[in-house]
Image 1 (cartoon, helix red, strand yellow):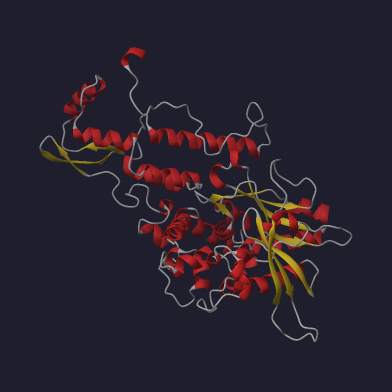
Image 2: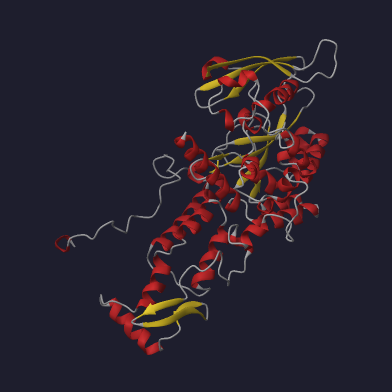
Length: 482
């Protein structure tokens, strides 16, 4: 029981961290302003999307009617809301790499397969910036660079438009089960589920009925629920009664099976399989409505008061959200270095002067002398030691690394500038290494977007392995080998 509780706490803590930094408040505000002004392309750019589709080309290839339908859907698209709900992976909560999510499907007369509007993520070796590509996919080579995959049935959102369509975001409340009785018993057939608390079996009958209807099986049938990497649940669902009345969908049977035994059957999307993370965070008291995406908060907590800024921005100004919406010249998230230092028996101050972090209670001549002594392997003043540590190994390095990993470059740089100043010159150390690696990985992503070849050897480098050489040792090297 203790192990299960610890796992649940760590999982919810991960989602809490994702909600705090993965979709910065400034991104939400910018994308919303452009979307409401009718600029869907600008909204996509503000939310970190690359648009790999041309409506003129779509009209020429697929017809004007389909292009008009695509344009109408793009005007309804809230890219920041889609980023909020995109599938993510543990342990860092980054976007699931190499995944294509169907947003909607367009049937064409004379075509055996529909055209998909998809949101795609780059492979793991090129996922810097957490960029998302928007494109049309018809089974042939789509626009954009090679390396993107075909749509995944597990992550389809064409049956869950409320997760990306701003005009239907209010449906999240009843589609997620937020307005239902959370204390009621689970269906009897759910006893076979492992870790039943994370699943949403009470929604599966209705969601499976929607899935089967979309697949042309309005009378009912069998569908598969993914329980893990190797286990599946085979559901047999009846969608209506013989008399055609309004009887709700019903599960006739449920059987746990191996993954390979259910090939070819419709797969219940992940969006309908699990309890919504935002709902878990709210029910557990991990998060307040003001720190959710505004559209999500409005759907899940319609009666809750809204902060003056309209939503998730409150978290940033409280030191728990994105730093990208905060003045770069101010401390982000609270003091990052001590402003008062015990220096040789006295209390001295350090602060920003002309864009640099400097000691305030030492004359320039003394500072130059101490810096020279430090260069000759002497021990510098405690004030200079604190400043040096802020440049090389700051306590807030993890926050900067996390923001860079999630694509919040503006928030990461605001954190650095807010502490070290706008004119700071970074010294050799972990902070400089992290920023250099982020720049190299953005270049790698640019090469991928340009369609250039993989690095030498054709092997995809690990996205988690730093690209800089190891310049720091865990322990000093013996002098005899220097």
